[in-house]
Image (tube, one colour):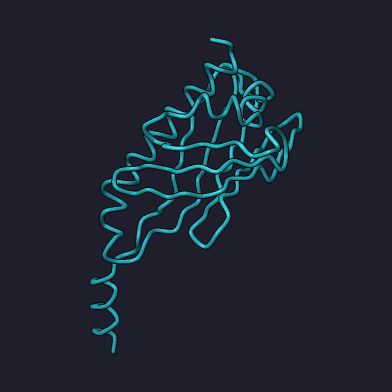
Amino acid sequence: MILLLAAALAANPATPSADIVTEAIVSPSPDALAAVLTDLDRFKAALPTDCVGRFEVGALRAGKGATARLRYDMAAMHRALTMTITRIEVLPERTIVDFDHATDRGFVTRWVMEPAPTGTQVRIRTALNAPPWPFAAYYFKAVLPEWTDCQARFLSAVTKSATGA
């Protein structure tokens, strides 16, 4: 029995995290970054066009409850979803903004921004479930690296927008 368990574990090693995580220290304040993130017209202007093929802002364009219909294009993955700003929490010690992409194939992206000695510490986590076999290998080799790059470029563009550059 132990040999069977050992063989099963060897054949199915633990799957790495499918989450997209970006961290950086940037110069704008948490408030300035949140102002870009929660205004979907400014948000749209900061998106890398090769990562998001479509972004249509809903009737509510800013603040909690604002929505957009968008299509992500990462490698050969194309996913159309509705995104909603579901949380805006502004405290002296941290600011959090959540973007919920609801549906059974959806996910949440959380921005946590905290004052740091040299600017603002930003942590972005897009919580994802890896696709099932046989698509998991493609996700980890092609989609995840491209999405990670897109998220880092988006942070850079949000930073520029927040500084007025």
